[in-house]
Image (cartoon, rainbow, N blue to C red; front, top):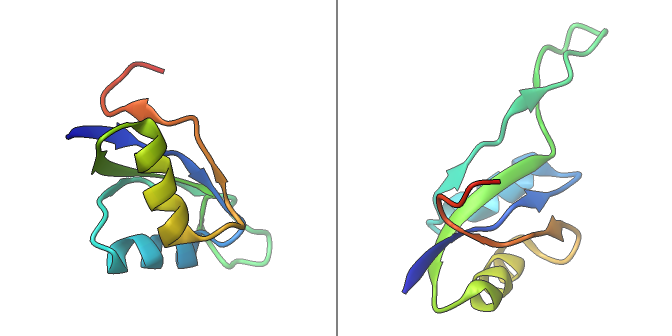
Length: 84
């Protein structure tokens, strides 16, 4: 099996991170962004990148989609450590 990074962009980053954590999937990020004028401070940004072992990129994407659901934008899937 190979490792793949699977970028996920979501409107619910906290829930996405919790789902990935519950499934035991390590991740890079999320980053923090958007300091709010109402003094709420920093919030989690909309992108997180899980790293998962799979037979191929399609299997990696399908597994992450199963974990995070259909409301997220996923991809492009890349071998882990590949340059952007």
